[in-house]
Image 1 (cartoon, rainbow, N blue to C red):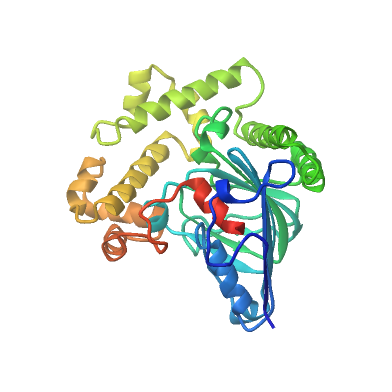
Image 2 (cartoon, rainbow, N blue to C red; image 1 turned 30 degrees about the vertical axis):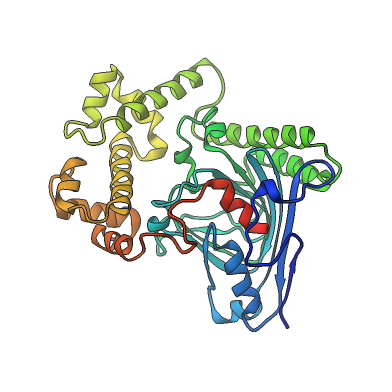
Length: 366
């Protein structure tokens, strides 16, 4: 028999954070859980996670025996979720992220069970996940992804992009990247967040805010070290150069003359230094191409009647076939198929053309 436990309201209702009853310490708190068989638990979980992810069963058996729970604590722009879940696939499609305004960065700290498999924006290609917990997976909620979760327990921190980019020049570069157990700061992060979760019912709102800010600083420091953006004045210079190049590229995506060479010449930078800074992005040429492809996806979703050939030319591609191949390689869908999706579904499944980040996070456990 399937059972559903919902503290803050009936399942179909999504209550804005401002209307949720705060806990005694002023922190917004909610809990939702499912347990049972015959697939009802999984369907309830699909509906609950629907505002953020399209959740799919990895097998019929997994659907029949599914169990999960999520507990959320939110303060200001930060949310900490504790999630226990059975096996599932969580998908944010290109069509979906192109029409929503969610742009938080999420950090999933896997504590028990097998860490999830990050499949990128395409269902067939996996990055190598860590062998065991603890491990952290960063995701840019503005980018497409597919996550294969197993029976596991995790703590999930949602942070605003602007908070992350105080330390990491381009937060989108974190998408799909892991912190593994052997990295020194990971144990510190585990101890810190577990203490926050244990004491959260007695923490003041001010103390919780400070503790979550500390957790975020540990995370961005660890990822910064991984990308070579940590340490001294040299790291600050690297961060400034990254931001300078990013601004230059974003303002010239439709310029047919935009190229690695034009960037280096315009900004008076050395090829070797820029290559090192953009190494995690596959190099400056790959960065430019990926930003152009993301811009194309957004334009196709916003204006699906646009002709693909002029769009490709305007974004620096020499012909439609080259553009289509690159687009499919990046997103596992062709431009024509994405345009067809946009024409058939001009609004998302929840009756809105756009959500805000915190509207969607609030729906997870309300």
